[in-house]
Every structure is written in structure tokens, then in C-alpha cells.
Length: 535
Image (cartoon, rainbow, N blue to C red; front, top):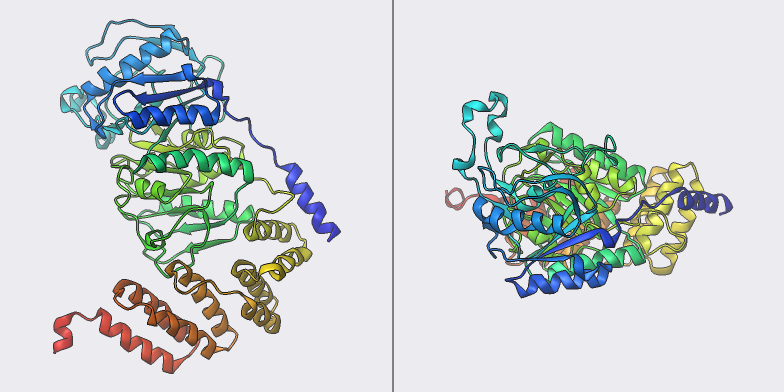
């Protein structure tokens, strides 16, 4: 254990926490027409020790989508005026407007480390063809970007910059950078949004970030591959490699489709995947909840078309389920202009806050991307002297094994003996399978305290246990688990189909002919169209 402890200490003290954003340099924007927006802004200021005078009240439409006239008259122009008058922006300000309705200003520098947009402010700006320059004036290879639509947040990130027009995106000068190129470069703004389907969901973004920073984070990672473009899969594969190298216990879905209702999905601290328009799979279990500090990103063109609905798209539902930080698009961004998951994690391991990581990981601003969460959230990614729970023990053990310390499993054995938790039991089962020690593998597999089959979110775990019994030659024990779950699928057709697909796969893989025939027939009855059944 001495060698293992030294590796743990080395990991702990080798990790350096980044420089946090100074709350005194945070601007909070609220809608004076919306009492919840005002309350949320003051709640955030109280929790994060942001000075009250940093809160700016704008009188804004309460609709999620607004016109360019509304954006300029109600948000950009008054906010720019306030920032200049209050000394946040250094430069020249005027009341004169250009042809597009923007006040003419010149920003030489600014001291805004982050801007927080509170629930109640509009989310997106609709395209206005009358504000676009002639299409012929745009290079043909950029015609796909010939639109003036944008997210409010992405547009605000470019407040310090003079822009010639409103068409297309603005190249992000801080993409993959932690510092400006030179002393004279003006940075875009780090913008985070506290928003969601309810006031309570929005305040939870704050509370969960602070709780995670105080008590630490722990959980597993889940990567969902096989989207429509190779570049996206390459990003996700890079994310997988990074998280695996950091010791996270993780599952990767490599088939077409996504994680489904019967896949293992316990304690998702990190989720990165694609590609569908609305939340589905394990997220739809009635009691699904993210652990505090969780970060999630689902790549799709319209994940944040609306975030006030807890059942449509992705960002709103993820916030409703307790995610601490997430990212999305209010309209078609094209893949290259979305937040890139591997760069988000790369930035976090550089010590950036999640708000800074959001800016670091996206190529274009004045476009459709948004970050929802507290921009000050600084995930404590280093190892802890006192593990938070079983997942922390596994993280430490995985890192130690990667460093060549095979005694790491002793810490997992010690943790397992305390509670026989399925996470440690399955880890030890896999550990001994790798060593071809089936006797020890069975010992730990059968010792697991199984989670309740009455909660469908546990079925993926129970199926992993069943698969373990199959692999070790205890087919009857595996079938008992599966048959018990099948009895619980009454009136839940989709759940029954997904369970049977998994069961049939197990039976085929492990040459269980009797079970294969039984489950295949049941699956066929459920999936054959009614007309064919009558024939």
C-alpha cells in the first residue's frame, strides 16, 4: 500500500487548480420585467459574492425569440452604454447609430471576466433579410452562413468588437487559447446563462456548481459515438481517450443509435454524444438525476431552440434533470461551429472554469452556440485524500494501474467489503477476468448487492451482472435476472423490446439456444407489423 499511496499523493499534488474568475469582475444581466429574473440575479450575486452594483437591469421582451430591432434597442445598445458609463469597458461611446441601428462605440479594453445572463432574457435573434448585405458581396464558399440569426449570448460575447455587418459568424480569437495573442488584443466576453424550464432548475445550476466545488465530484463517463459525420466521432473519440487517461470508469456506445433504456448509465458525471433532436434513452427514466457537478453535451443542430421546456430538445431537459453545465445551439450551426467536447475537457484540465472552457472550445461567435451554467464553476478534477464515494475509489485505482501500480485493486477490495456496491463489484469482476481468474471473478460478481429491479434506471446494471454470469458459465443465474426484468415490462413496449434485443444478443454470444429461441420469438411478436401477423 505504500507505493500506491505515494502515487496517489503524487497525483494530488501534481494537479494545479486554475485561477478562478474574480466575482468582483462579473456582470449579471436581469430582465426588469421578470421578477424571477431579478430574484435569480440577486440569488447568484449572494451565492457567488458578486457586488450588487454589478447587476444591470434591462427592460426586455420576455419571449425566447426576438427581432434584431428588439435586440439592439433593448439589449445591446443599453448594455453597451451601461458598460462604458460604469467603467467596465474602456474606450469611446456615443449615442450616434450606424445604418444597422447599433450605437457607434470603440472598446480599447475591458475588465469583464464573465457575464451572466439570467432566466427571463431572450434566447435567440431571428434572421432579418433586410439587414443582410447583398448575397453577391459574400464569397460563394460562405453562402451557407448567409443569415443573421444568432443566439443572444453568442452575440453578446462579441460586444467589445466592431463588426462590419450582421451576417455569418465572427471568428473567435480565443478559440484554443488561454491568453490573448498580444497586449493590445481585446478579448471576447465569457458568457454563461442561468436558465431552464423553471426558476428552481436555474437556481440548481448555481447550487450544484458550488456544492461540487465544495465537496468534490465523482461519477462515471459516457461517450455516444456513431453520428452522421466522421469529424464529430473523432471529437468524441478524443474525449474518450482523454477521460480514460484520467482514470474515469466509462462506457462507450459504439453502435448506431444512442444509449438506450437498458444500458448502464449510473452517476453520469460526464456525458458527450450525438445525434438526435430530442432527449431520449436513459435520460427519460422518471427518476433520472445527474450528480452535482455533472457536465453534458449532446451534439445536434437545435439542442437549444428552446430551453424553457423540460421535454423538448436537449438543453432544457438536461437542466431539468440537474446537469450543472451544458452547451447547445439555438439554430443550425454546422458541425465545425459547435462546442467541441474534447476541447471542453482539455480546457478544464488546463484549469479553466467551465465558462472559459465554453469560449475556448468554439470556433465562431455571433452565431448560434450557448453555454448554460455558472461560468465561474471550476470543477475539482484533482484526486482527493478522502474519496467522495465508490467512483472516486475507482478513479484513483484506474490512475494508479495506469502508472504501473497493480496493488491499486486493494483499495477497491477494501471499499467493496464495506458495502458490496455494484460499481466496485463489477470493477473487481472485470479485473479478475483480465487475469483469467474466473473463480475470483465469480466471487466478486455474486457478492454484489444488487440495486432494485423496481427502478428501471437500474436495469442496465443488472444486465451487466447477468452478462457476467453468462461469461463465467452460469447461464441459469443470468436468465433468472433477465426473466425477472421481463415480468416488469408489462405495458412498456419500448422497454420490453430493448430488453429483449439485449437478451437475444447475450443468448447468441454465449450459445444459449433454448433462451435464444424463446426470446427471439417474443421479440418477433412485438416487432412484426400487425398485417403480417394476420397472414
